[in-house]
Image (cartoon, rainbow, N blue to C red; front, side, top):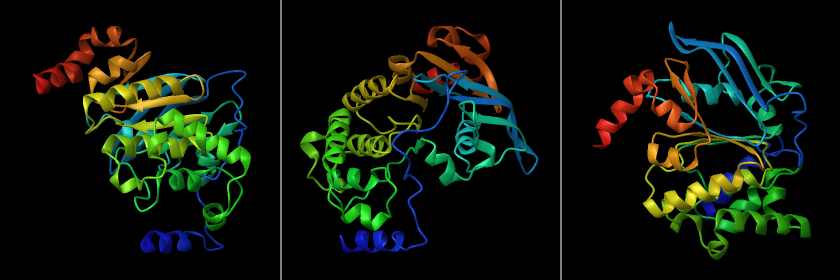
Length: 282
């Protein structure tokens, strides 16, 4: 516990603010178009084009699955959206007003874009409740956020998120003793505390049991509509259980888009990805 508190004290220095402290309501404007718009985005690393004239749109409230072979550009795409990587060319807009390529990572997060990496990163020495409390959005320094009592609205929000992620019974347990799947749900819950408009979720079911995968599918389906959700995943069984619209990336650009049945029937997709995936799991 002391190590965790020391980390929090360091983070609470006057010159440090959590990147995820965002307004209750994102100012994103989707009245005239999608929530996320990428056009002709290209980025190269040492002469290799990781993203090659990528075009992608995500509608408000949509659940989109992104699939493709290793090296297809899926992680780099999310790095660009969140401000971690700057492309060589192209446009990336959040709604109709916010040019993400002009913003830093904290500024992108402040608009309501949350990202969950494959490996869960929770404070294992803290309880589930404390992790969610710490992640709550607000214009407050980290230490004040951690130490302050929740007001009625904040407690209601925390209870709502606990119910959404299915961890009400675990609220007072230390996060370090949770199962892998429960830690994944907790981290999603920590993002939800920030009231995001767009969630980017990387391989959420890697290492999960079948039961945990089923619960994760239910969770993501519940979230869709309340916010836009983009899921990068290799498990095709899981993708089929949640997919409404699928984008296939290959060599940094869109190879195919449509329903799971449509992309599964595409000979190009089967050649570069799905055929190999089926053989690997045979």
